[in-house]
Image (tube, rainbow, N blue to C red; front, side):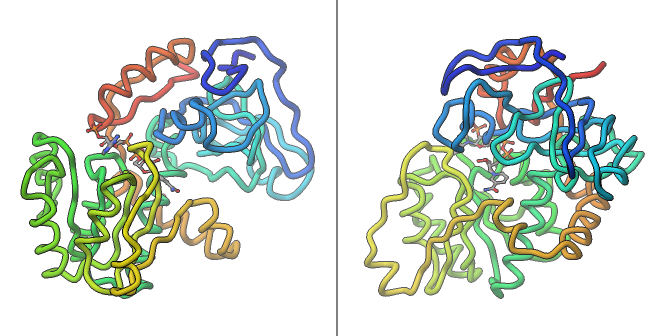
Length: 326
Ligand SMILES: NC(=O)c1ccc[n+]([C@@H]2O[C@H](COP(=O)([O-])OP(=O)(O)OC[C@H]3O[C@@H](n4cnc5c(N)ncnc54)[C@H](OP(=O)(O)O)[C@@H]3O)[C@@H](O)[C@H]2O)c1
């Protein structure tokens, strides 16, 4: 089969011919249809994001059809199904004609969902729903989210609008304000404006925004913590700035604020099978509405480098999809 391979951290991505994997007990092989390029893929390709051995195939989610099943009930149940899928921990990913994974890492796709839309089911939609759940469980009256013109940010805008949850969206470019407002966002602040820190502090305290979803890190995290009301929690879920979180512990100590990390896989691992099945079924039912992802462009697998370079320039304009099977 053809697969995208990287030989070393940060190295070039090349198409190579490698053997189609064979499923062991509890595993399935998926003939891949499509796979998005996500920020986590960029971090993985750059090296240092997840421990792994080389050479390897990137791609942290996708869609396709289960064509081979190893022993066990779950693999047998999934055989022949069109699914959304993610690779096993440390294993080769979805940017290939076939992917081997655990049968627990696949979820059947509803027939009305396209392979492109379905290829994005397991990361952003699940995370957006998890955030809404965490806000409810933590009794937060309002939420702050940065990098809000992202695909995930747009899902949050729609989920919060539909549930009457006040959401303060932070973007970094002027044109992103109008994009989010058109989706139903009420509060959108531009972090490049001179009044940003002042406006955020006023609004966050007015609305009681004690849950801060932080995908940027760096200087922005300390500003967010400074602006947030007493008892706030900053949930660090990405590091788009590439910088560490540096903050004065004074405000954490005096105002009982917390910084915690969030990773979808770790969060799901704390849940039982029944919860996961119900959760995924909720996600599926909103995949063509609140949890849909806008698609900007598709590229063939062999044009992966071009796809990535285009994506870096147009991150807020919708997802870039590697179309593996035409
Ligand atoms: N922890 C988890 O489990 C988890 C799960 C899902 C997603 N995530 C994270 O959630 C974030 C959004 O994912 P996505 O797929 O929805 O992203 P996306 O649609 O690809 O968009 C990325 C967004 O990040 C913005 N951005 C990039 N670099 C930035 C920086 N240095 N400062 C501020 N904004 C910046 C881009 O804005 P411009 O257009 O202005 O560049 C764009 O709006 C990603 O960081 C992803 O890794 C984490």
